[in-house]
Amino acid sequence: MELLVLLALLISVTATLAGSLSRSTKQTIQYMSLQAAAIGFVELMYVFINLVSGLHIEALVKFFAVFAEWFSAAAVSPLVIYWGMAKTEDFVDRPQMSAAGLAVFLAVLVLAHLGLEFLYSRYLPTQIEATFFISLMFTLSMFLMATRKDPFKILVGLNMAENALYPLLARSPINVMPFMLVLIVFVNVVAVFIVIEAYRDYQTLDLSRWRLTP
Image (tube, rainbow, N blue to C red; front, side):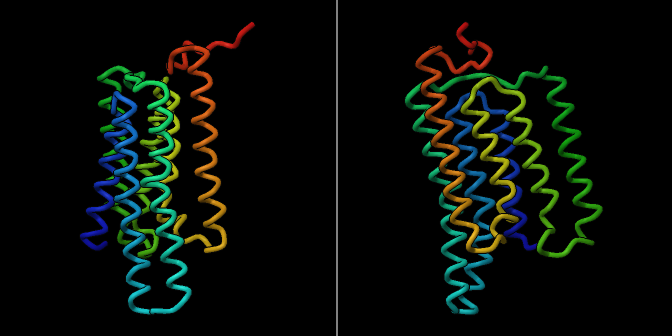
């Protein structure tokens, strides 16, 4: 694995971890944007190299498709969620887990994934050598979604999980990418509007205080 690729993946994992532990919604969104920017940079450089070396129309189309997906994940989706936060509040909470349990869980999770990376990365093809980093980021994103009461942080966790799969999604057929981009942005916009409407009713982003009206 190239040094630049490894560095980008480490930044992505660190941003994902920091986002899963962040207390404020604003910080979580910022870490989400950083994660997407770092992990997308890897694939963007791959397609840019192919474009420069090949200079054919398919490489150009692929470059713009991957760039659009990267820009959507690193800028558009974070801005949509940030707009929703600005319309409500910068909710502060922490993972619903004891400090000791959280430390043990994260330590075991990180060590297990890094151990798998060390043991098996040499046997994997280059195209999927980042699988264990992707798996670690995906798991941390699921952790964020499962341990928070703030719907915006849960939405960020969903986006971080999708961002973690970016190296795999970027290799999807070009005709599938526009549909994926529209779907992701649409889900974020709809979710933000639902949260804003719920906030107007309950005056809080704490999901534990949201109750159905009898």
